[in-house]
Amino acid sequence: MNRYGLLKSQLNEVFEAIKEAGMSPSEFRFTEPEDELDDQGEWFTPDHYPRLLHLPSKYWFRFGDNFASYTPGSESIEQTDDKLIWVGKRAALRKWLGNLKREIDAPDLWASFSQEDELLSLEPTEAVNTPFSPEEQIQIKAAIEEFRIYITSTYSLSPEPLAKINRKLDYLIDASTRLGRIDWKNLFVGALISLALQQLSPSGPGLRELFGAAGHLLRHVLGGITSPPLLH
Image (cartoon, rainbow, N blue to C red):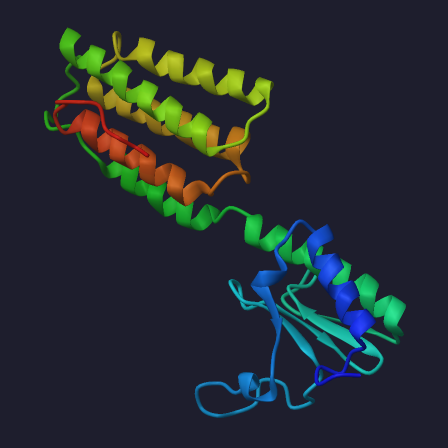
């Protein structure tokens, strides 16, 4: 037994379970009693059972005498599994690691929605729906190609999603020769949302970074094109 209330062999099983879940043990640590104090000096957990903390997210798993409690749960913020011996606690730990990975990998759709509104609020320098000039069309193509490179170098994509993305980007290039700049902006935002939700989520760095790169490109296109933006 050690200061965390678990056998060395049990700690090793925790370590291996984290690795099997595709996560790094360096992101976890068992908390000491003083780590359980909040800003007012009150205890988070008065029972002092060993608690495994995921440092980046602050989610945790607690090993009780005959129970395990953890956050996030399968369908709730916090969950407790009762009447467990070590085998049951180990199974609960693996379940928690799955819940944890689900939550930290999930895209923040509400944040993306606010970014979508920001993109839609961007207006061309010319407030009328004028067509792009031949020179602007060439530079839009260069900007879209830069965006294509950003996507393919940032996200791990199988051939089918990659083909769909390339078709959407090719369509945006072609549409710049036919549509006015306001109509093209709306088409671009719609295509971006489709890409984010159907093809890219939840792999890669997430929707926030994708919308950030897209906003950079869109401001460049609508604010008077001079040279292709560098997105990476």
